[in-house]
Image 1 (tube, rainbow, N blue to C red):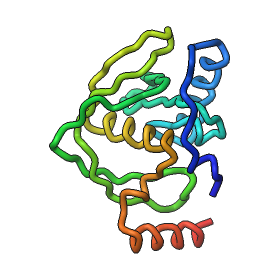
Image 2 (cartoon, rainbow, N blue to C red; image 1 turned 180 degrees about the horizontal axis):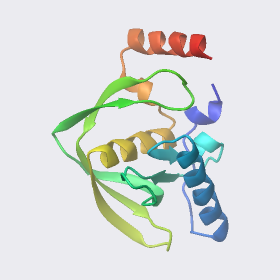
Image 3 (spheres, helix red, strand yellow; image 1 turned 90 degrees about the vertical axis):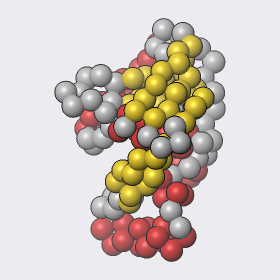
Length: 155
């Protein structure tokens, strides 16, 4: 596995054309997978950048720099999560059903936004990536080892 997936990404100082280009590349990659979110380290960029689009019609991607969870609901939501770095496998993960996230948007403005349901799950999954964590880290060691073995067979 690429060690960049286990590396904590660096904060973004300002929104530049280069940052906007990285976000666009991330959105294109996310759409091609297809997926509902992507952290920059998944494409080898070690910056705290994430994109999330859990809309039905697509084209609603939220671009985030330095996303941070300010508040998480007590109520949990279970969702089958997967990631391209472990092809062919997924696992049910429980995460807060709703989160309030502060991030810098594409205009360089600090924004606070509430995400619920699949949007909230995806935002939390991407922030984990930016912190060098994978969704499998939320599983017991036995379950995690089983998934990794299964994924290797799939490859």
